[in-house]
Image 1 (cartoon, one colour):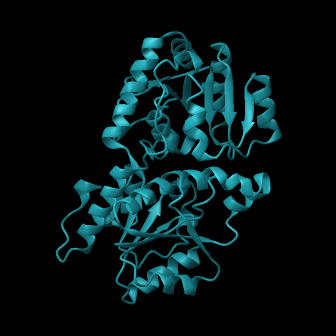
Image 2: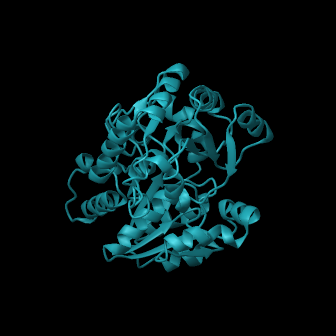
Length: 376
C-alpha cells in the first residue's frame, strides 16, 4: 500500500510524544514493504523549539536511529492534498491544523480512493472538547483512538463502530535492554524520570510520588524533559533531584540502561477522565527492561499485569517503600524487568500496532466490511 501520515512533526520529539510511537510504526510499515510518506507543516512549534534550544545537532540522534524515515514539509494545504490523492491510506494526527483536516475530508467525500483516518492521542476530547469540535471529520472513514475511554467519547459523538482503539506501543528496534545486560547490574545507579513538566497538571503528583519518595528512599534522581519553569527547577533543587534538560527520545534507552528504576506519574486527565491510557514511557521503559513503579493508575483495559510488570503505589509512603525495595532487592528488580519485557514483546510492539492498523484498514476497504469491534 501507499500510506501517507500527517503529523505535527516526525523529526522533533520536543514536547511531542506522538513522535515516539509514530516513528516506530512507520518504520515497521516500511519494513513490511509499504510505501510510506510522512508530512509535517512548515514552522511546527515542536521543531522550532528544538532548533532554538539545541540547533541542528538536536536532530542528530533521531537521524542516526531512523535513517529510513524522512518527512516532507508543506506550506499551503491544497498542493499536499493533491499529492496524496493516489494513496491507499491517509492518517491524520489530531495535532494538525483544522484546515488540513477539513481539506482531506473534502477530498475523500469527493471520491478520493484512499481510506482516511483521524488519529487522536491526546486528552483534549475531554479537557478541551471545543478545540476538537473545530475539526470537520464528516468525510473520514474512521477514528483511531489511543484508548478505550477515548474511543467511548467518539462513540458518544456518533462514530459508533467507526472508531477503533489503537494503543501506543514500544519501538522495540530501539527500546530494548542493553546487549551486555549480564553483569551490568552493578553499573546501574539511582532513579530516572523522563517527562515534561507541562502546564502543572501533575505538579502535586510529581512531588508526592516522585521527588519526595526518591529523597526518602535515598535514591539519586535524574530528571529529563522540557517546559520546566523556574518554580519547577526550584522544587527539583529543594528535593535533591538533578535536572538534566531535554534528551532526544532516541537516547532514552541508553538513559534507562544507566539507572536501576524509573517511575510512571500519569497526568491527571488520564487518571480521572481517561483511565486505562498509560503514557508512552510505560511501554518504552518496560521494553528496555528497567523496573518501573507507578503512581495510582487504573489499567482498565488489562494492557499489563500490575504487581508483575510494575509496582503500583497508592500514596507517597507506599511509593517510598517500593523504591527502597527496588534499591535493595536484586531479585525483585530482575523479576519485574523480565515480566515487563515479556509483556511488551508479546503484545505491545510497534510491529503489533502496524499489523493491527493494516487489519482494520483491510476490513474498511473490503466490499462487505465486517464488524471490527473485536479487532479494535
